[in-house]
Length: 192
Image 1 (cartoon, rainbow, N blue to C red):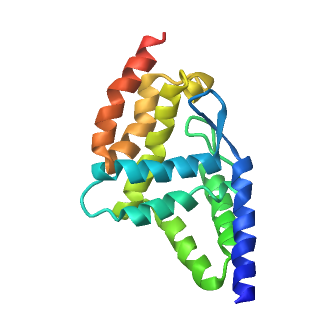
Image 2 (spheres, one colour):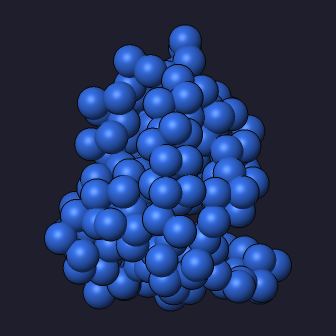
């Protein structure tokens, strides 16, 4: 029992480092969001917006995915959606981080969470597709609330926004995309 609890606590204390990973997205008050805030906010998005998920989604699994999906940023850092990122190198760094971080847990828990993280990354199951859609839906809403946020920082126009985010949001949450699109369009085309 003690060794199991020691391993669980080692993982939880390591996970606390997620609070220090700063993202490109700003909160409503203009302060840059950290990855722990992002993960918590996404879990809350799933809880509140779950009624807009396609039929058959297991919201408890989605929330679990969202709570752990960015833990790898402790080692790999954040990859802003509008930034220039070597996606192959980032995927390798994130896989190594997942192996290390979930390896801190007792083997049964570590294997379970690693599999859940991999499911999110592969974006193939209905739960993962909805979770990934929420992961892409939350930042634009923060950008709207903060007066442009990372769109201003990266000089994003509406065609770029739509090309990068529409397929990801629409795939798992079409109703959320239909709600978001006119708001972002109005903001990005009206600020010029």
